[in-house]
Image 1: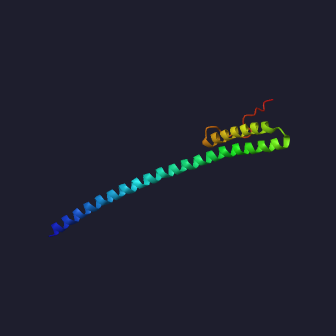
Image 2: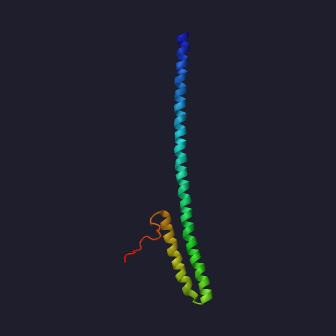
Length: 114
């Protein structure tokens, strides 16, 4: 009788271990899915940041060009030039934020040789 009971307990223990292993595998898969989702959210946030920096630089250049043209009277040229400068500034900001261009360090690059 004790052998039957021990055998039943061993079967139950083996069954519980199998269920526990299945649950652990499911939890690991969920954790991997969360990591992938977090990476995706970070990429989306970075894309929004880069696009807003680029668009903001162009808009600022256009507005400054318009204001410059209104006060000075150089009707299309101020807007054209400052719009292009805003575009260049936007591209440079995006490249700096993406890490493709190094941020300038103050004082570096000057040669103080006499």
